[in-house]
Amino acid sequence: MRRAVIIGGGISGLSTAYYLAKAGVEPTLIEARAHLGGVIRTDTLEGCVIEAGPDSFLSAKPWAMDLIRELGLADEVIGSNDHLRVTYVVKHGKLVPLPDGLMMMVPTKVMPIVASGLLSWPTKLRMGLEFFRRPPAVRPKDRSVSEFIEDHYGREAVEYLAEPLLAGVYGGDPSRLSVSSVLPRFAELEYEYGSLTRGVLDQRRKLKRSEASAPLFRTLKRGLGHLIETLTGAIGSRMEVIQGHADAMEKTPAGFRIRVNGAWLEASHVVLACQAYAAAPLAGALDPELGRCLESIPYSSSMTLALGYRRQSFGQSLKGFGFLVPRKERRTMVACTWVGNKFAHRIPEEWVVLRCFVGGLEDSFLRESDKTIAAAVRAELSAIMGVTAAPELVRISRWPRSMAQYTVGHESRLKEIEQRAARIEGLSLAGNAYYGIGVPDCIRLGKQAAGRITSASES
Ligand SMILES: Cc1cc2nc3c(=O)[nH]c(=O)nc-3n(C[C@H](O)[C@H](O)[C@H](O)COP(=O)(O)OP(=O)(O)OC[C@H]3O[C@@H](n4cnc5c(N)ncnc54)[C@H](O)[C@@H]3O)c2cc1C
Image 1: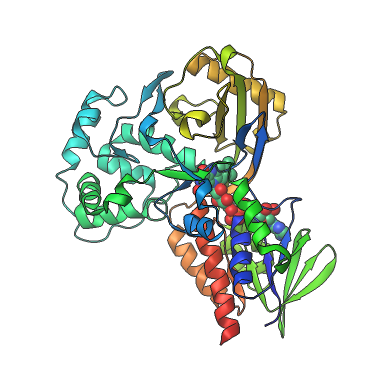
Image 2 (image 1 turned 90 degrees about the vertical axis):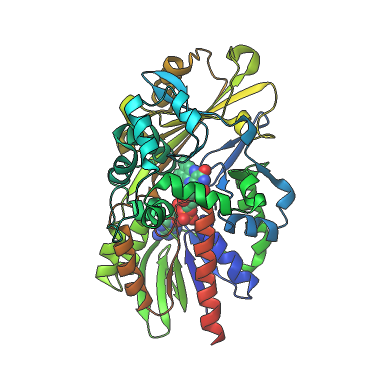
């Protein structure tokens, strides 16, 4: 076995490194930033656990929990406080609760929809009638999420449910996002049942009781940064880390050579675990069309702002997880999480922390000063929530071009990327650009890349 080089030290690259080291292959990892973990970073200020990037992962996807168990962190796992789960949506400047029983944007309970102030009567009626929709005769082609949800539940369901829910995850635009890639389960349910509501209800009946009662999100008490520290510690000296920007890659008779900090590094296997646009020039030097395909995957930029207040000066009590701001009502903020309510153990009793997510941005906003950004967000918090107190803690984290956007046609782009990458022996791709934006899918892809390398070296 010769050298395996991983480019990118986010959770995708670190998972690859971990599973390689576990199988006896000691990788070299190249990371441009001064710290490992990519967009995963936890800061602890005044005892408040503040996530700069992701704050949790979906329980339904097993790969993050599998890794956490292997690392001996199972006792550190906490679930979202789902008994307190109310998420609000801003409508005409006011906070209106999302009706109970929604599975993303699919309604599964009648009375909460009937009673909801979020949707108009024509939308409620349409949601009810959707139950009787028949399956299509042929499998529908890929469409945008907007077209798909509008077709099932009407325009208002796009504007006040799908758009804010997805903007909070992707920082993206549902009129461009692909339903087959972003909501693959719903696309399948449509094909099988016709009605999404009937499909979701039927699937739910088949769930095991343990699955049905699992919290929607899980995370670590001390933050996801703890996962990165433990993962890095578990790999230990079995991984060589080079801090630098891999800026060129060439094919050699024995595999590859990669340039970093002006020196060339030989490798038999390379895993590009960086953003697709960063992988593009490297892979493009071996296959220009592969480079173009990778470059064509768009990314959105985002930012998180954590604002911390002493409870006695905050001036109100919060019931629920936070709120979403639909594009129609948006100025800057997409979502705001009331951190201490969503997760226990994160915020000491005497503090209140509001974590605001700003996404789908013009990159120029990212370059504004902390003062300007905090002032814009505080003005919105005042208008929406009536918060006028000055925060005592402010932590802003900027994430330029960090979230891949699975736009319409993503699946066919991936097919071409996969076919082309497979022709370059020893090359693998991992990261959030391909088969899932969330932490669990990134871990899954990292593990798969490691598996390909170890099985190639065994054969
Ligand atoms: C603000 C925010 C909130 C999120 N919230 C959630 C959430 O709550 N739950 C969830 O599941 N997911 C969430 N996500 C998504 C998830 O966190 C990411 O998709 C995932 O962490 C990406 O990991 P990655 O390793 O693929 O990429 P990154 O973390 O982006 O790491 C890629 C690394 O590659 C390095 N790199 C790039 N090019 C080179 C080069 N040429 N040479 C060397 N190094 C290079 C970069 O410096 C970077 O560190 C969120 C993302 C963001 C930005």
